[in-house]
Image (cartoon, rainbow, N blue to C red; front, side, top):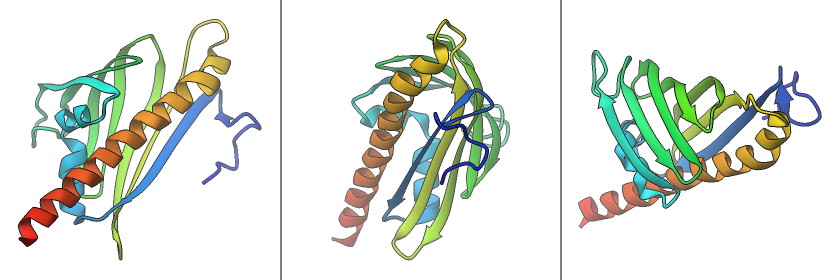
Amino acid sequence: MQNANANADGTVDGNVHVAVRRVIAAPIAEVFEWCATTTNYTRSPLVLKARLARPGAEAPYGVGAVRLHTWAIGWFRERITTYEPPYAFDYTVERSFPPARHEFGRMTFAETAEGTLVEWSTAFRLPVPFGDVLGRVVAKPVITQVFGRILDAGAAELAAAAAERAR
């Protein structure tokens, strides 16, 4: 969905927005749990390392949880800010390399006839010379691919688990 306030270059208020959607053929609770568990992200070849550095208050990946990710393009320290299983969680990137100003990250989950619709969105800006261009031309496509590959890995793993249970 295109934001009505978006500029022709796809930025909103100077931030680059990324949104990836997938329908995963699995129950919403299973999809939410898989996506909330950061160590699953290493199922994507673009995520080199992922771990829970500090558990959340009410659940391991709940509010206050700190997740550390090393991707092929950089390193990210995230904090979960909202946790509403099995419908949504929000996070913010507290620190990263290369440096970025992260506005928000959000994953939402909705039941559909085909399974669970996952929407993963984020907004950021790169505080470097030509950061707006680098964000749109380099970072946005790479982040879109990484998000998509993570969700594709989740879809494959959850489908295999369902097939195993059906035996």
